Length: 119
Image (cartoon, rainbow, N blue to C red; front, top):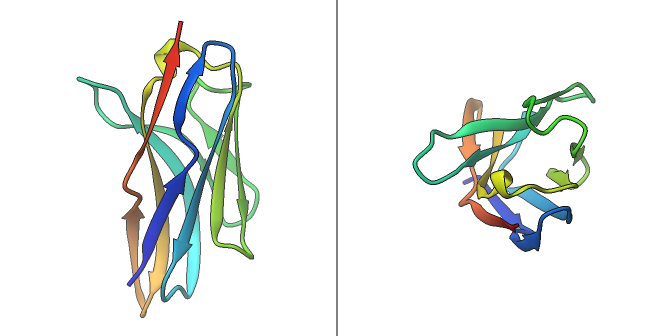
């Protein structure tokens, strides 16, 4: 059984910073990409940032230059450093990972963590 557990959300003022963490646990043979999505009220879930098995990263245009995604393969953990936060960054942030477990490859999701940016 594979689980993704997130931490680090909260309330912050505009211009502030937060760091999200997501740790994968369970029977894991390999992790391909890891990343973060977010969903604001009334909107669709959108990609925020993803990091592939090496160091290749992709970001949504709206967060480029402000957010940084990184991973620690020794800990099966992905991080999202969020700087210069804006009220429009307010959303539930979900961790996502494509994991090979028991010869099956599939996407896993965390439970979500709320990020609220006040103006």
